[in-house]
Length: 272
Image (cartoon, rainbow, N blue to C red; front, side):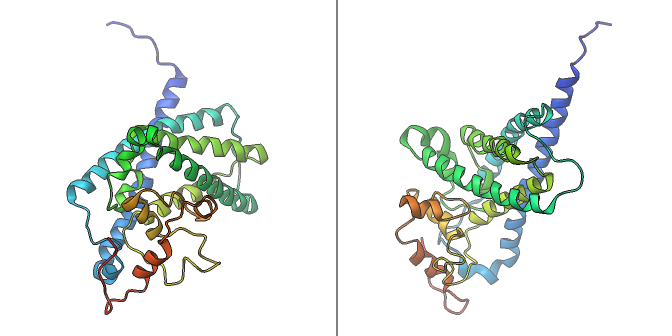
């Protein structure tokens, strides 16, 4: 029998982490995107009057979103190995023992704010002429997005979306060990907000976008306008950057109110 060199233990560990990463990312995507898609489907007639666009995504478009998202999950799992390597070498400090409630709280908030800032500027960069076709066009093929478009990225965009994770963990670790519960909550929030933003239905109430207590949060209409028109609304969780940088859609509030004020008995045509 021919003999083969033994597989290095480190390579085996990374292979296990890669397989685990694919599993975790797949479960997260199916729970987030699939969960929102299921709610939209089950709610059906109850929220039909809150559809933002008149157009409906075709089955082939949904299938494309699923295929691209599955590829993105593979890319994410590869990039996740960088986070694993940094944690294994102690560069990213991971908290041991029971979760610290205070640390979990501030780290979740910090991760959300950092991610939103990164996403805005990365997103604007991907919309430049030099990068759009190469990286971001694949996502914008979903002009009428569905929750399944949450991870529908080309390889280049998937890499830029994933690299922020180890970068943010490095920043957090400079201040304190990274709380695993904070990571879990942040990643759940990320996919949920992403899928809701692509759901095609506006469920926020009238006045939401102009209220000082809620207007700083993005809505489904906010991101849907980005898909249908492309030149505005680059933010992910918050409207801060779009307002500060003058990239908020000039009719965002009007478009939002046109949908939010509809009732089942007072239905006008959705905004195209």
